[in-house]
Length: 79
Image 1 (tube, one colour):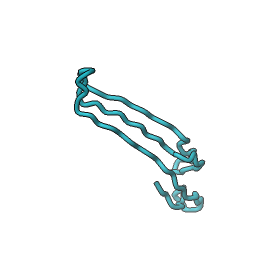
Image 2 (image 1 turned 180 degrees about the vertical axis):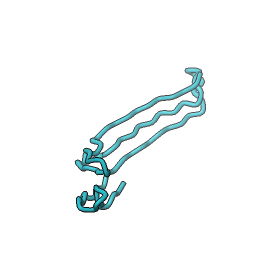
Image 3 (image 1 turned 135 degrees about the horizontal axis):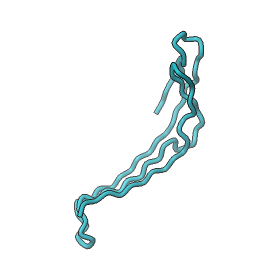
Image 4 (image 1 turned 90 degrees about the vertical axis):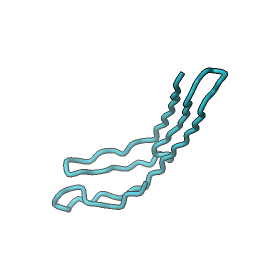
């Protein structure tokens, strides 16, 4: 994800530096696992800000720190 530099205020006087962040998502779907009597199994792993880049983003109401390195995992299924 790339965001170029931009102005963080409505008057266009405060310039915010651009940033580049790498996110990663992988998932595996299996229609059925008969042995466990599970259907529609989905495993997924998501990584936000893979290289833990520090950045800020601004809006007309303020400036906020960017999301740090985070890992999410999930498993879903029907039985």
